[in-house]
Length: 191
Image (cartoon, rainbow, N blue to C red; front, top):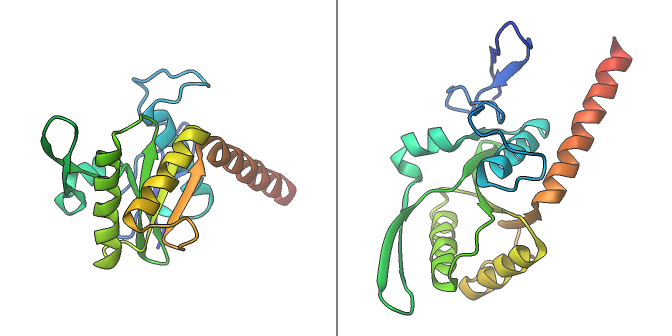
């Protein structure tokens, strides 16, 4: 279900809502981060991924909504070279497809193998428990893409499995731009 709230007098655009009715922040709402076009920081990548979900007609929970909802925090345990580690972890976004949650992770920074495996095991547990129905990883480069594929194989999540999707950020951007332009062309033709 997609609801809408007015975005204000400047644009007249609507802000879609996620299924529980809470408004989502627009991907560009955080103006404190004056990123250049080539900035691949996490906020930039999350904004593009949120825009990609939006142009595909998907609803999602943004970082602030996920932070406010303790149900989206999982516990990680892993061992690195020096010690046993424990921390909490949340997905970057949660998208919804046919009412089912899909965890979205934006992978820009290289994590240790053990920590990445722990994150993927958390998501595998959520898939098994049907908390989520899928996992989308958005990677900044080909090496990150391959790193996620290898980690997925180590924990039993394969790219051929319909529950795991791995995309490059450049692909997300290109598809978002293309869909936006297609929508603009349709809107112009209808006017």
